[in-house]
Length: 383
Image 1 (cartoon, rainbow, N blue to C red):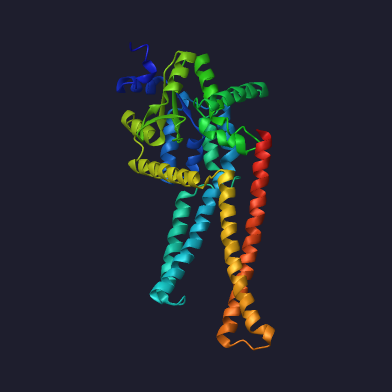
Image 2 (image 1 turned 90 degrees about the vertical axis):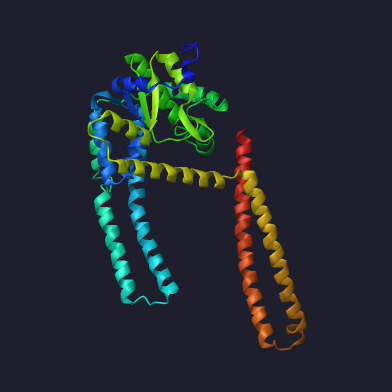
């Protein structure tokens, strides 16, 4: 019975240890990119850990390609985070001035700003290793670790075949990658939508050719990689384990970054500092919150059109009410040549100003509605 349902059975601690000691470690793109986001202590610890597997590491060409394509964006995103924090320091001190009824020249405010900026500069000097793409020490270390350990570039025919298979898999929610299907629909270049599947196919091919087991380390937390039950992550998707074993005859297991660190610390005499686990988990939680916000904001075009139309109706009603107020005042006073009392003049001017704002808002929303309707018509033509 065990052999018949093997993919459903989580490997024992002994089996995981044996795989850990013999398998090839494959790192996902997000693992490499997050090295730019970690503190210096965590980053250096992880690079040392990767280096310790130097004889048993490998990455598909797709991982190397995605890493190089996104590297610059992540570098500048990280640098900009510090610049944004400087603006938040100014906003915080301004709020302190308002709340505590201080002045910007007050010594306490000057001391506070000086302390915060000094702390920020110190943190930046300590943790921000890469300031620009020309001087990238992280890239240098990654190039060294994975020298000669990158898969071959696929031909266009091979990529097209994977995309064709991927389209069928995604329609049936067969992992991995179907959670990225929206990228295929929203972008002219759909390579990013099939990136996970390309990585998966290249990994299977590598394991098959060399008859080796694979340990896959990823920061990805989506359900098209993990078997998630009642909010609990059990292990790799059963379909992935089944496909891998069927294609290669070898064992496959996956680790998230925090489980990788925990396991590494059990297996090695020189452990990764425990603070790294807290930082990795913190980054994972931040990604979960960001993904949750993204899902809430991602409304279908039809839903967005309905909301804009509803907003337009509300704005039009407010415009109509103010137009009536203006018309009533003009009929009662101006057309009869009567000078407006001071309070009526104030009401008249204020209503006219608000009316102008509402008309501008109505125009903007009308343009937004037209744009959304054009997008919807374009999508319907493609179907």
